[in-house]
Length: 267
Image (tube, rainbow, N blue to C red):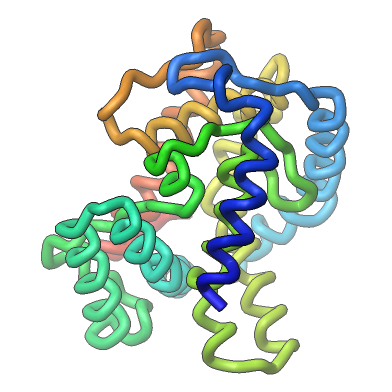
């Protein structure tokens, strides 16, 4: 099954990135040939967020006590460490892969299925690696920028990478085949993620061009995550709101990690 997914992802990646391989280096402007369609999909996603996800996230923040919220966030992060480990191996980062495996083992056992982030406390930090990044390390171009319905920003490489990541990133699929449990877990994961980025969402709402801001920040972060200081990364000219929004996203990520490590509040 994994081999089939790998072949499928590589085939899709070749199709989706072939039109942009020569134009989207790590320092080139964002390649967005489908901008008109992407903006319509962004508007759809934004309407869904305003009408459903953001209210659900605020209700979640209000009703769920901070220690429980931190525990839920840690569990989903623990699920993700399986994907991180697989991609670290595929990228040849063996030392990091050993750390990721140890982190998952420690948090799944001593940390009680990941509720407590014991790994960070003993020097096994959280990493973030996806198959989209792995494809980049293997030399596959980014391809066009894509705004995906429900899923948000991506590019051809990242979108195809999700096919493989989906086989490793969601452990509940291996624990139960009960649709109600699986759907409830997925819904909780979506709301939990949205709750962590409430303040960043406010900055996006206030932006002059929210679509361009989200697109450019996502692309630069994806490039940074792929190359990890091995190549220069830029988008050309960045507008005034870019750095503030990017810093806010970093603060949200660091804040959630800090709270899971020391028990402090994230709300």
